[in-house]
Length: 96
Image 1 (cartoon, helix red, strand yellow):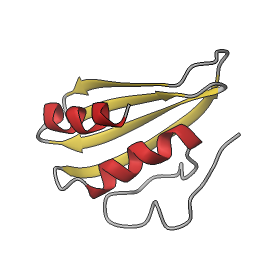
Image 2 (cartoon, rainbow, N blue to C red):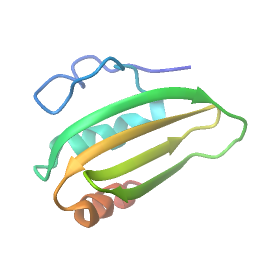
Image 3 (cartoon, rainbow, N blue to C red):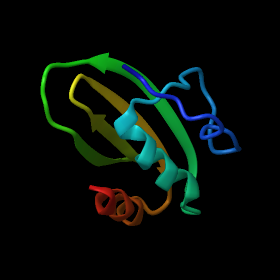
C-alpha cells in the first residue's frame, strides 16, 4: 500500500508524525525538498479511495500550497510552506 524511501524525509524541512508516503507522492516530495523556495513540508495522512487514476492537485493556501496526490487506491495530502506558491505549483505541474 505505502512505500517509504530511506533518507527522503530527513532534514530541516520535515517534521511531524506522518512519515509514510504513497508511491505517487515520492517524486513530488523530492521536488519540494530540493526547491529552495519551500521552507517546510508537512506530510498528511493516507486515506483509501476507489479509482484507477493518478492525479496531483495543488491549491494555494495562506501559508503556501496544499497538494493532494491521488493514486489508484489511496490519497495523501501534503502541505508545502512557501512565499512563492505559483512558482512551486509550476514545479509540481512539470512532474505530471
